[in-house]
Image 1 (cartoon, rainbow, N blue to C red):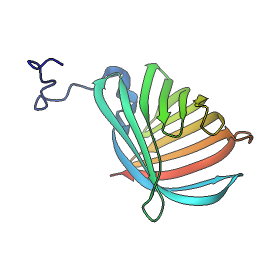
Image 2: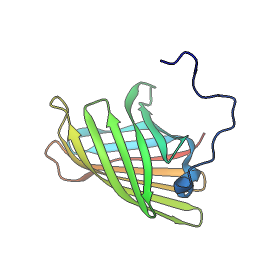
Image 3: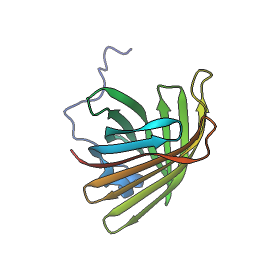
Length: 170
């Protein structure tokens, strides 16, 4: 630790958004709304979903997702990074506390006021985690409405829809 250098000057103006991130600039912020989940091995459920995209001054956005039950109990969280390594290409690198990591690769398309991110992921699971073979994610931003769709192949089931939510900018 360098005691003579306390770190970044928090009063300095934020650096400009990395040029590669301009296609997803509208995602930056906090999004919250209602969601619904189902899967062949569990009961259907509802939840509150929150997604936060933060510019950290680098060529990626920090991503945090959290969800709560209707009674306010925590249900899920994950964190990672959204990268746009080439035009039309998107990556979402995620870690989940239940023992999985996802390397999601896909596409980004933008037309008028709509941005669509679609991903397919390879999943690595710890020895104690539930078996998740692969996932698919879709995020669609139109104006101030962000929808998410999530499917997974897990616990012996083929790729099956699991979650959907509709969020609005907070």
